[in-house]
Length: 342
Image 1 (cartoon, rainbow, N blue to C red):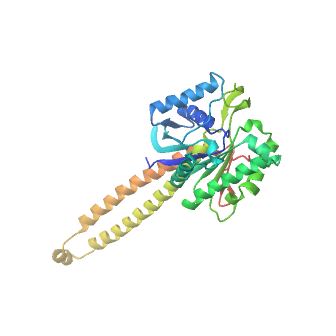
Image 2: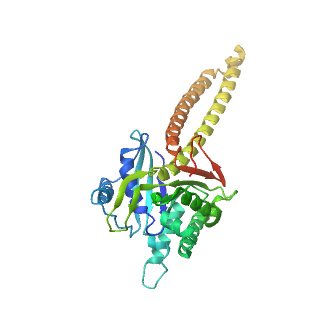
Image 3: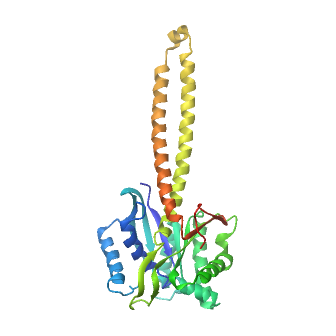
């Protein structure tokens, strides 16, 4: 297992971060294509379970996050540990809260920026209501998006470009035309810096929903049908990117081992070709070189096995991106063969 990945959830108050977290837990405990997410702390699992129970059994929308909080998850494939990732959460109202004398807003914001600097990726939440307001030219929507740009800039200043999962929440509220127009405005106007060639940003755009025809606000009854869709994709994306990087590193290590094997073989055969007199006077070291070749061969076999496992895991994970998402790298749209437009 590699070191813990830091995933920071960014979104304004009411964007759906808390409900997304509950739904992600509820879905990924059972798993998708063999991938599961389990909280590191059993009590944390019970806390998340209670949040989801409140939605599906009591039929009430939960309260949003009001404190900075971390959740540690283990990502496994067939229950074999692969990664741990830490979900950094914070209160959505922090983004628009000004520093006031006698409050701790400055320290909260500094803590958020500190977490961003250490993060491996961002889950950027923009809800359907904000997109509707944006399409209606509501100044409040653009003000919120300007703040998000400031946050992302803070992330860029302290990190090389790393994955951002642009997550459209409450997608059941949007008509297909509204979704397409909203994404176009985000790409070409509000978040256009993320989609410019040369920026080397890795972006996934995916629309998620907890169900259909849902309505109601925090503390109000849940109206509609609970049926989560695409909840797993935003969190799997940074894990997929990291696995691709590991695959590249493993391939480079294999090439180095193959080079070492060639060098050891060349020396071994030169030693074998020495005359009897040369071996008598200088010694016969061919057994030592043969032992070195065998050691390198054993390492090559281990590395090939590692590569095969990584490729297999990546292929399984790619199945999770075949529908409902679009991927961009350095301003250019990438796709798997069956990826649908959103």
